[in-house]
Length: 128
Image (cartoon, rainbow, N blue to C red; front, side):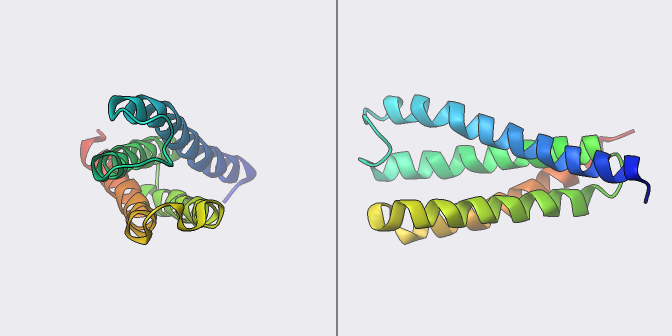
């Protein structure tokens, strides 16, 4: 693999991560307010389920973009994105401690990589 190919791969994964993070970052305050909460820390079951939902959609979008930017070997690139998402979830778990239910953190950590792979699969199915 050439240096250009490595850079393209790295940029593809970073682009997918940025899209995922931006989507989650933009939707979190909107959804939190929609559920009448001031902060995410004062959560309800509906808010947690909505958060899992938009996190899955954001990860799928990131996986799709990663696969599209990579151009080839889409699934391994999306898997790299998924590994980064798991790492970010682990950091989040450590930061929030027991302020959120364990099932929520585990679900987000598990669904993110799967959703990224689904996004890459959709890209593979739709590319020309």
